Length: 553
Image (cartoon, rainbow, N blue to C red; front, side, top):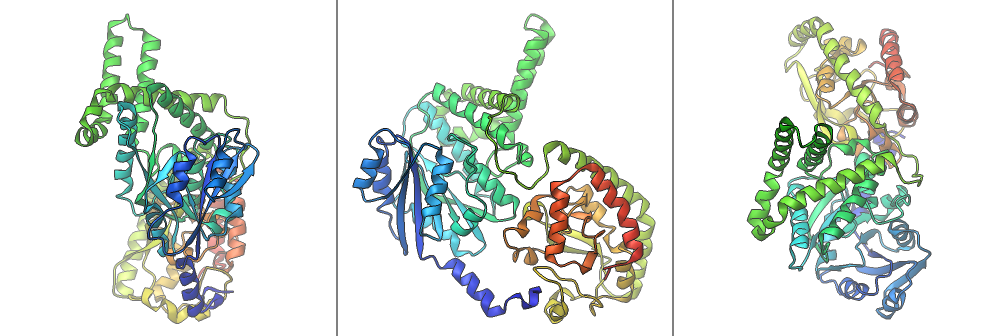
């Protein structure tokens, strides 16, 4: 069924309306030996204000040996008991048993604010929002927990400037239940509290789902009480993060929560320790190298230290030491995680490993530079022909969905008359392809020169610049318009796991004649069996595909 006929306008409106009308919310709280905190948590969760829909509170006991179950039952929460399997499995158990369309999560050692649920679920009035993230607060007075709070506040400031995020912690989180279950919930290979929550949100973001920050969805929490507890927690995060990066390598360098400066601090502390170990402290030039490395370490921390000076200046007394402990604990945890990883076996996910990404990017840069050089005369001649044929700019740019569904401006030689984008609805009844995809043979909006350029794929030449910028790859799934991507189902969103390509399996397998299922099968096979040799093969097969002209319109 084509885009135009898959559902009428009224049905689309109804679907969007159904997404925004919430009849039930399920609050899920995993608990393990939480007798000391669960009462305050439940009292707050069960007395939420201004929530204009029904909600239930589910406590999933994860093999407690204390009075957790007894206390939860006495407070009239819905209680599910399971053998100890970890918080990820406990949350999944609660999600499977939940009655609500929205799943809200918090932890047994958190106390939600009176309007927590209101602010956490409010963003779901937008049908495109799939998940939300709230915030921590603490009333502790000692320096270490106050430092921890300022860490969070610094990250929250960063997230508040972003329209969409990719990082959600489950101390204050919510998801649409249907999407949560379609994606298998939290990865149960994380047997202890670690990074299972951020891993799930990374997976959703990889598919282009919209996740947002809800800063007023506040929960009160007791942070690390001392340096020893802080170091152990950070070491654990580093260890399990190394495990996670095996299937989410792109998060090594960037996510919406972690400041880039923290990654530099881990690197420069490692460099400092490496210099000390290699040249020793008894060689005078070694001292200067160590001093320089540490100086750069603290220079990268200046924005965070400036934030602390403004928000809680007393915490500056311990901040220099805490920065070293943080970078050291995370760094050593990462090293251990890479060298001696957990024996757990995660599910198989769509995506490329770090070495494959590195090699692919190298091929892209070389290929883009060659392409721009070789095809520059063709580009110049095409520009003149376009100008002589019809009015308007030579280069046409359009918003497309890139890797993880992130929008970017794709560049093409203009092949249509001005105003053609506004006329798309006029020709959609000519679309015969199945699924959320369209291609119109003999499109009346295409100019005379445009037909020639499309026939020989010369209109794609400017995309070498998109490749060089890192927005596209030489080979990959074709970049679709964002309004088309918004109609994808969960399975179809797997094609967003990598950068779109200038050419790809679709171009050498039928081009515009393929419907969505046929395209997706080719693209997922390409992603799951990727190698540089596959890229080279597709690049060379593109030449006869272009010459044949099959599906080029």
